[in-house]
Amino acid sequence: MRFYELILVEDYKTAAVKFNTEADPNQVQKAIAQYRQLVNKNQVQGNERNIDWWAGQGWDKFSQFVQSKSATPTTTQIKRKKSVGESITLFENDQWLVVIPLNHDASCYHGRNTKWCTARPHAGAFDTYFLDREIVLIYCLDKTSSEKWAIATHKNLDKAQYFNKDDKRIDAKQFQKQTGFNPKKLIAMVSHNDTRITTARQNRKELLTLLKTRMSAWKKQGTFNRDIELEKLLAETKISHPCFFYITEVGEHHGPQEYTGIIGQSIIWAAFKYENDDENNMLSGYDVIKYIKNPSEAVQLAAVKHNGYIINYIKNPSEDVQLAAIKRYGHHIQYIKNPSEAVQLAAVNQNGLAIYYINDPSEALQLAAVNQNSEAIEYIKNPTPRVLALARSKR
Image (tube, rainbow, N blue to C red; front, side, top):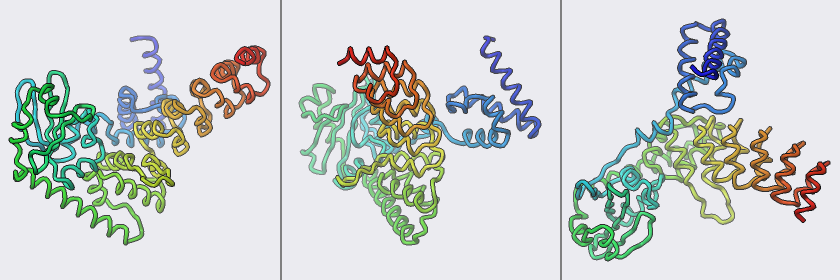
C-alpha cells in the first residue's frame, strides 16, 4: 500500500469513529463503503471528495449526500440503458450493416458519431423527416472503418438524397463509389407501405397526440404542479420545446426541482436543445438550469460550456465547472464566488482585462494579465515593479 493510500485509510477510520457517535455503526460502515465507490468512480468533486470535510459536516448531511448520489445514475449508466430503438435490417455481413431506423432512439443509436440532424439528442429533426415528410431513412454503416452514409428516400422512389458522415450532400455516383452499393437497388428494397414502417409512424403520431393532450390539460389547470405521467411522455418523445416549457413553468411557480433518473435526465437534455427563433429573445434552452435543483456535474458542464454566464445560476460549482465557464470568456469570472488561483489564472490568460474582477491579485496573476493584454495594467492597483516593466515593454 502506497503512503497516500495509507493516509486515506486512516482518514476514513477517523471519520467513521466520529460518525459512530451519531449513528448506528453498521449504517456508518455501509455509507462509507458507498462513498468510497462514488469517489473511485469520480462521481464527486471538490470538497465532496474529502472525507475529513464530511466529518466536519456531520453524519446527517453525509448520509443524505451518499443516498442521493448513489440513487442518481451516472452518464455511463444512462448510456448503457439507452434503447437501441426499433429498426429494419435490410442487409448485414461482416463489413456492412444497412438499416432503416423506425424511431428516434434507433436513429441516434445507429447514427452516433455523425453530424446527421436526425441523430441528434432531440427528436425534432427525425420527426420532421419520418412523420411530416414521410421520408424513410437508410443508414449504411461500415463496421470495419466506422464510416457511415445515409439515404433519404421519398414515396417517389426516383427522388432521394445522399449524405456522408459529416452530413454533406453527395450524389448517387459518389455514394456508390464510396460504399460499393448500387443506390437504386438499396432503395428498391424499401417499401413505404411496409407495415413495420406505417405502424411505427402511426405509433409515434399517437404518442405525440397524447403528449399534446396531456400538456394542454396541464396548462389549463394553471397550478403547474409536477405531473409524473406528463414527465414520462416528455422523456419518451424528447421534444425540446415542451421539455423546456415544463421545467420553466414548474420552476417559476414552485422553485427549482430535482430531475433524477432516466426520465428526469432525458427531460433536461431535451430542454437544453431548445432554440428560440425570436431574434429579440436571447433565451437559450440551457437557461433552464436555474430551475434545476442539484444538477449533475455533466449537466452543469454542458450549460456553462454553452454560456459561461450560466454559472451564475449554479450553487457551489466545482473547479472543473468554473474552468469550463471561463474557458472562452475570462470575464465570466465575475459570476464566480471565491475562485481558486487556478481559475483566476485561467481567466486572465484568456482575457487579461478579467483581472478587473479579481480582488488583490497576486504578482503572478498581474503578470499573466498584462502579458495577455497590456491594457490590463489600468485595472491593477499598486502593480509591482516587474508588472509595470512588463506593461511598458508591451506598449
